[in-house]
Length: 204
Image 1 (tube, rainbow, N blue to C red):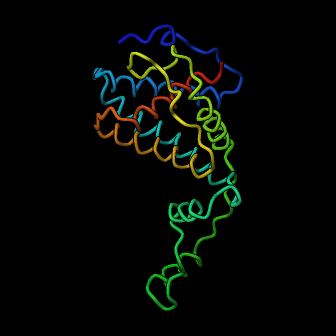
Image 2: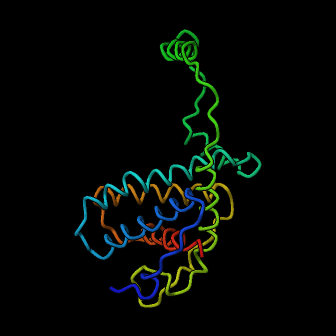
Image 3: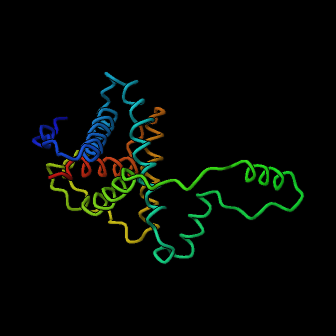
């Protein structure tokens, strides 16, 4: 299925190379998803490699950035519990247990310092926030999902930090399943393509 004028669109390079790389990742991921949706398996191995590495690395940066910039007051109690579970934060091990001794050993030998915040991570999460907000407003020629009446107007904008996190986690799940050969054409895949349709055009 031809994608119309939007398929021919290529943004001009900017002087900000990191942002250029982010846009290129979105464009390449969009094309990879489209090749799967359209059953174009000419470069199946390359598509899976891109999704499993570059695309997932981008989404992991988004998720990491959401944790870094999020403030506790922006999350509901349930969202905070989910965030704690996602981070693997658990109750301290019972004193004297094997788990407690292992933790003490790790603490005694871990001399790592606080990690500096990566500007690319902050850029990725800022870009994702904007992308999620503009998805419902994309014009028909920017909607690549193969339907006669093209629109993403029914895809809601995340209303909280928790919803933003859930949508980013959905991106990761869908990219991974497509990378492993799952070819379901369902709503999670549609929302994921919508993210990359919008993300690839954001420089406009």
